[in-house]
Image (cartoon, rainbow, N blue to C red; front, side):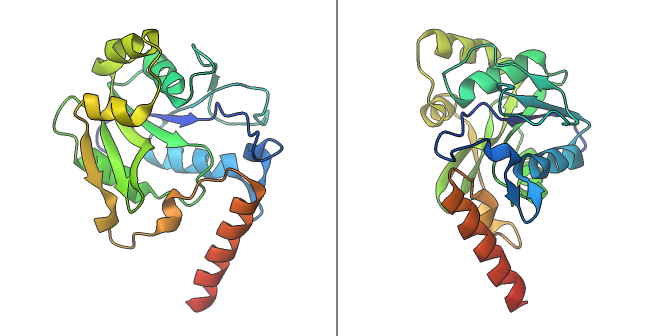
Length: 200
């Protein structure tokens, strides 16, 4: 990307459905969190992991930043990252989507033409955790939290966010947006990727 951007890997979940720290779980012999970290550094040198520290491996490259406000979901992570980030724009990335592609973030960046967030639209609809946020919206996000409104989709609509249809990207795959919530999700994705590899 030509414009310097901070990448925030959102890792504040408790992994309750997974049964253990899913960030340490192996997908194709690598930890889930390592896929996110590698993708983030391929996009920018400014990378942070935002969330709690209890479930995170201790050998992570990027700095881990504690959520300023806990128990409110990903919005708390975004506000924390915008507060501590050193660039005017923030790219948000889930910690548990190992097939996520750099092509998506390039497409989002190409759609920046106003001082509003840019969010990916997949075949499943809006993907709030695959999005770009300008620092200028930070006061609005803080007001939203003060009003106890934490849902990202209605917030993005209120901010008149730019919707980026990433299904038009060459080589688009629904697997890009598969996030791992439970052990079964991990098994299904590994099977799907193995099937695609065998067909080539």
